[in-house]
Length: 316
Ligand code: NDP
Image 1 (cartoon, rainbow, N blue to C red):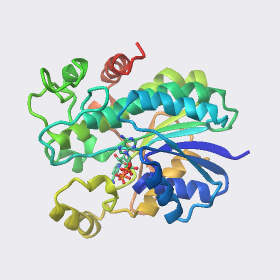
Image 2 (image 1 turned 60 degrees about the horizontal axis):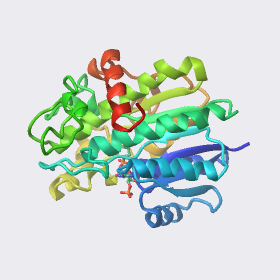
Image 3 (image 1 turned 180 degrees about the horizontal axis):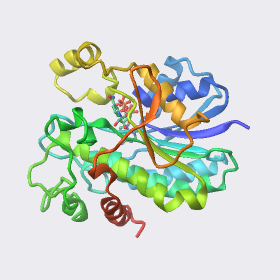
Image 4 (image 1 turned 30 degrees about the vertical axis):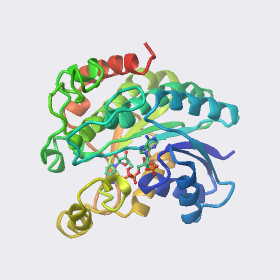
């Protein structure tokens, strides 16, 4: 049978490109889990995805109720779940004041980490019921959360500290909106921190569930896709110069189509079944198992993050 893959944030950029790449193989039915139904419908049509190769379902990761409603709707639709890709993200690089999710958590960590954390935990049950030969749960990582790279050393650097801000609920007003508890808010750092959370969560899922369930847990850095909507809140000059800078100076640039193929490989390539891995690609577009920074691979921190996140999303 066809595999069924849920991709969050499939209405643009990497998520859309991967949705298209997987649907085109004819081997996958793609559930596009998106906050803006019409935008997703237009994006799928605009990308040339064939009718019937995808289903759009509403999911707003900035609301834990919406995450639970998505899971209910998905279950009512009666499809199996073979793979889940936690791809959606927001990036507010110039923000100096926080915004908050429906549940009152700082938006970058709320959407990128907490919404996905709840989604992944709930849908694990569904994935366990699937008889698909290779089930995979993938969470997008990033080089920017990895301080063992050049890009990861551009200030402000990612760092979760002792997670005191997260433990206090990332509320902002009477506490901190930053995971490490800093008083001042920095949108660029909040994004990078959320990506460390994504990579730590993938590894903790691997430690807790891989042996018992056989599910493959993976993360990846698809390359710098300098043209996606992720940079929409950046200053105009940055948006103008970033793609050519990545193309000609760092040579780290990848097109949306190429990044979509990379993510599609992590979902379906028979050679990428190893669990607990953070995939990257070299200049010849060959995949390799990459090293995470010390913090992004710290098991103690992953455990602590898991326990605090469970409380914040109402699982504990
Ligand atoms: P885009 O901004 O193009 O896509 C992000 C997607 O997330 C959009 O579909 C957006 O929806 C969706 N989204 C945002 N907020 C929510 C929400 N509250 N609920 C549901 N969906 C939401 O960015 P990219 O394609 O570049 O990013 C995709 C992933 O790749 C991210 O996880 C990012 O961290 C990662 N990544 C990107 C890199 C890059 O260079 N671009 C590099 C490394 C990693 P909408 O269309 O409605 O806005």
